[in-house]
Image (cartoon, rainbow, N blue to C red; front, side, top):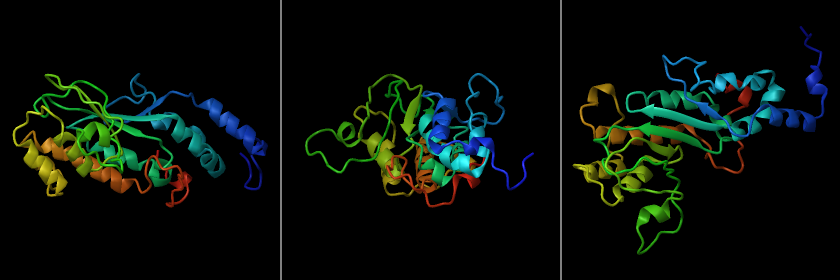
Length: 249
């Protein structure tokens, strides 16, 4: 064990060399997944959980600060959830902390929704991004205001993937404008989302499948509250302290 006044040999290396080592340690394509209660951390699906890949960030404050930008920009953060376990998502995101969150290029949330919610959306990977500044005049709003966004009609839904950078209002607008949706009273629910009239979800109110649309709105709203910095911010200059205290893993 080193005394307090000793410097680790690794830190005697130049900063440029240490950055090359960080870059070498983490592969270019790798996922960080949400580990749900009851799932084995060493399973094939969850082996890429953040706790097994962030050891360098916990060595010392210096390595945490230096390596964070590479670690969080290099990995893809993916959470596969259903309407029954979606409430684990906000806590998972808070483990990163606002400063580290600002370094993540994108967070993908895959909702596995039951068929009755949306009967016409195909099994695709969708990304709902922030509204563009320009407003189309005569063209359909969704494909032009949201980019990239691709909707195709089908008979049942299996998976819906949303980029975790949207608000309840934007989500309601996107779903409301999709041609061919056949959902009873959907426009009423979309209007309520737009007007922010839907209460936060609790288990006692889960009696109507349409309320699950409010769940998504709640998730999006909660995510935006947690993310002080935008995920795609080029500055990435979080103000909530150093990442060494915010890792929480």
